[in-house]
Length: 146
Image (cartoon, rainbow, N blue to C red; front, side, top):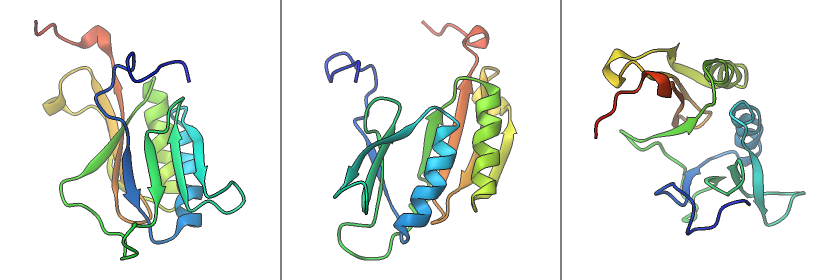
């Protein structure tokens, strides 16, 4: 890891989502998150039978596991998880991978005028119904608000 908690520019440490089928969820996220340069960073209890996996580029930022209270995983209304893409092509690949691995479309790749000219993104639902997004921000089109 190239950054520590003192130099990481993010305000988030990590997020966790619940799943009702770990194996299927991991196959889905292995494929989808690879499109934005993320991979498995940590696996517990071990690599041969992971029950909790953290994804990221360098740091464990996005955890997938069954709920700790052993209840069924459910979707948070109004909640979604957005991943940075480095290009429009990565956004397109993210969406395509989500659909090819059993996800459902919830907003095709493209601009969203409400989000500003710099935004290009897509939305999908994972196998448990969680809403996920890939975003590319064209900084050459961003306005200075200082």
